[in-house]
Image (cartoon, rainbow, N blue to C red; front, side, top):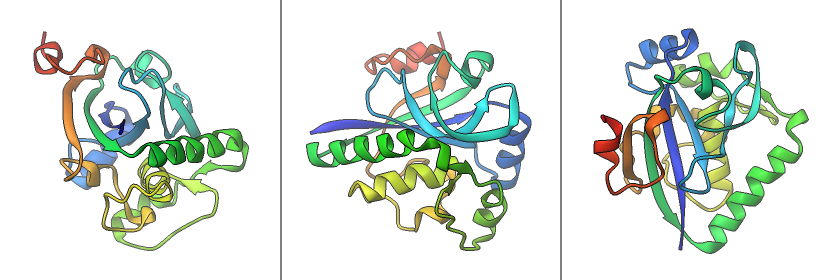
Length: 186
């Protein structure tokens, strides 16, 4: 068995504040990582951390991109055990998108259609939540009970099958879970 990590975040940017207000939920962004260090988290978001207008497939990290600027980002880090086969499939699915990132775009229209429950499934368009849900599903990791194009970041909040490992400031995350509560508020 291997572990994967689902990371929910709230940065406090204008867009994340709007999403938080509309959803009435605490987190507005979701990423996925393949190791506990979270040195590389995959998602759809800002290509340039200082400019929200250009977005697409991103490789995020605790100390890079938007998180380097927004040190007050709060997060929840969840883990999930998956089979070796599912882990390899997930890695390949993420790698395929990374290799063809120029084909993919951030689907701004989905920010409106998802909360309204309107089906929209552009071939090369994602928002953070639809990306994470789709790569999980395509990898045989079926933890959500809806199609990826209806998934919102907070659908992962306390989702059965995920283990909450850490909650607190992302900048304080250490990758060691045994004292995560103490570390988050130290």
